[in-house]
Image 1 (cartoon, helix red, strand yellow):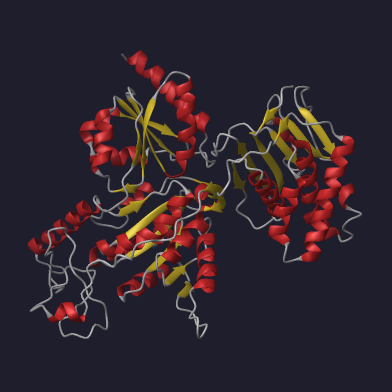
Image 2 (cartoon, helix red, strand yellow):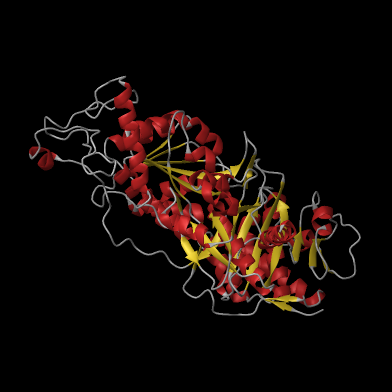
Length: 599
């Protein structure tokens, strides 16, 4: 069997709550420290403990980090799923299976390693409960030896995680050693190997929710209210930890921020609007079901023109759906969230660096536009581990928008809260407590005129709504533009957004290798900028890649550019697993065959 170096996928099958996270992170970071690009994806159940969980490490020297449809190395530790896990492995793969775990008849073109994990860990850990956790480190040792992972890197990774717990470190270190020694004495070399490279030099590994929390902190957030919901909770938890560490008065130690775990998502968004109205940079984070509860307050923020930042880490719906699976199916609901006519600004991070950058910039946009700004991440980018260049320290001041203070008001003869003076649809505002007689106004979600006075006058209502529409047009010039990669001579375009980006990058290279060149537009925000229309006009056909059933992005593009709708074709993926490159390639090729037959 021909060896495959630095290009394979490791799939570990365990039980939720068994402590496998430390083991899997140790493996992944060890490979990363050897200079080989990696990504890590955790597929876990929606209960607390006891159900199957899987962790997949993509190892790829070329830097492809999307999920692979095929797994090459399986570590089968869960008796309940072992038969299905092993049966799913293809020709040329290897299976590391715990001795005594049920297994189907395995074809001869697979390499099988049976390891007595329980027997190996027993002498090390007398306590049976603790033994169930430490046994995972035995497979770290076995897999590291089989794949040629440097044990110095394994130990460095393990020390980074457990260095503050010396007893735990020694115990887990011993388990790794036992596994490696068993593999060296009893198991033949594996056909997959890790060879040291330098492609990860200077790079970091981080989850999208952690990156978003860092960005929000640097963006000046001082108020966070949230209600726990998968997969957004880790964003709030990370942000609270960062604020607690870095946002305290250096003299008194008192917090210069507030974090409130609300009783529900309705209260969470209500608190954000109250805090933001007073001048705080305020945000909340949620997922689909929580977003549904925020509908009425979101409409209030849009109509009363109160800034707010809302992170939606998308998961599979509708209703409770699949809480621990990924999706891009909140797009249409967020774009028009509220009853009545609304259009919301949406940021679409595709990378952890985007999560960091948008974490900062969302506050600038919200305050400049005096409107709610949504950031639509998803479970894949939010809760999984990605490789990135280090984040840049912010180098520009915050944009607080059109805020009038005492000095500015002193120069005016009158102040009308909802009057557009500059032609961009954005009025001026004051903050509560501003010491000037003109500063006060009444914030209301009912009909109002430019002076913020209550009215039900039809013409006034229409005038206010037209100005809000003009503000949305101004937003086109403020949101991040798409990233466009044009291929000379290509008549076929691909349009993607969010975490689909990584599968599209890999798919384009595969398609090019098969003779189909494509240009690519990576969408970063709504409303669409002029570059989007120019791209669509320049292509013969455009494949819109999205992770939902109903082609929601294609629907938005069709509404915006009906004259170009005949150019759009859908590439859809909605089984809850992160999209993979092969799915994109297969659907594009199938659509291309259909196009040929239709001519």
